Image (tube, rainbow over all chains, first blue to last red; front, side, top):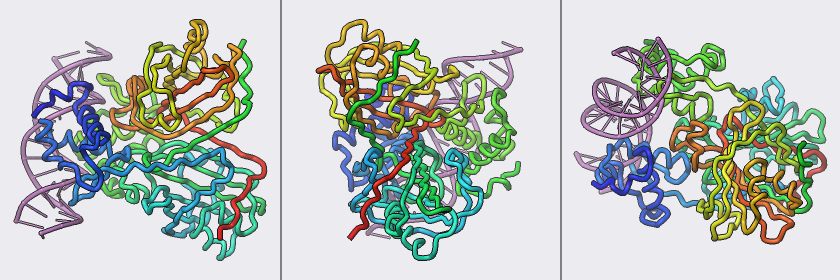
Length: 244
Length: 244
DNA sequence: GAGTGGTCTAGACCACCCT
DNA sequence: GGGTGGTCTAGACCACTCC
């Protein structure tokens, strides 16, 4: 009963979503205990279970909730890590890494073309990076051009790209990044339990190194609730000259 | 008939989405002509209209399609603008601006707290920014702390924040940015025709100025297909020292 | 009036988890 | 076995656009 409390928004599932979000922030639905099932919420709000599911799915895409089939829907602890792009050293303290696979692949993602990758197949290392807690925060696909020997490959599986390069005496000469969002690719959707079809935050990168022929490309995918990028500029910014 | 071509993926709507995406990239569905209606696609793929709608809605969220009730669903021209964060001057050539509203409001968004905004109500200017073509690319909400007189307010409605400050002799001393994604707030959903509940790319910003008491906060919201952020660092990057 | 997309509903099946 | 979420379907209503 009672969708009198739901009048605020235009669509029903939006109202439901906002009401549930309100309860989460108020603490009515604490983490570690499943929230009421779709059937119960359906009855409480007086709307169809499908509408409830729709609202819950949207909240999953935002990283507010996570659902486990057979168990229930849970409120996620909101621990978002901020990666400071202006700190030229991405030190990423206490990052732990889980290696997923090492393959040879071509880069197929069309938006990667902005970074002008080679068309040949490259060494591809996929891994999951977590910070502090052991909850996965980043799904990384690294592509290494041309020839590096076996030991370095192991390094790429065990450490961050920048660290692996550094430890092998390879210096980074220039780097390009691009931040956008796209639907989960690879196993990212399963790793982060992002509902199918919804986008994730993404950072494409390219490192040009001091070692001839060694260029590193990659894609970082993260759920919105786990990662954000910051940029801090002190000092004197050149203001644009007045137009006209 | 024929979902034999759809076997690839796990869920039906995902397969439908991928097939439609394939047709768009192949040019089977050109822009400016509506793609087949949900009813026709439903018949062609042999799946329920709802499943088709679900797939189309996900593609809308990604900015690939845009739907107009009563007219049809259209392929969006993919023209994405790249904002280079490392170019300290965001010159934003040929940006055109449409003023939406000037109000007094408090900052309510909880993620804004990262930038430590004041709790008092501030002057709030909302506008839409387009580049080159007249298709909206950014929905901007600017909050100006404390007292600025009427003329400057007009400037904020007509120009970019940085320009408005510069033209009034106010220098930016430091700036902070945070890039993430969140569901459309304000009128952003309508402006960009993002389906309800899906996230948009977002950049929160804060400018500390040379004029005492004048601090500028704001939120830029953009659809994923219209904007991405890039960062290019040449030169010598300090590599992190090998751990241990 | 016919066609469009947007939304909501009712009902079903599945895979999964827990007892 | 009973509960959970995930998915798919059929059918309906609305607001809108175009003829």
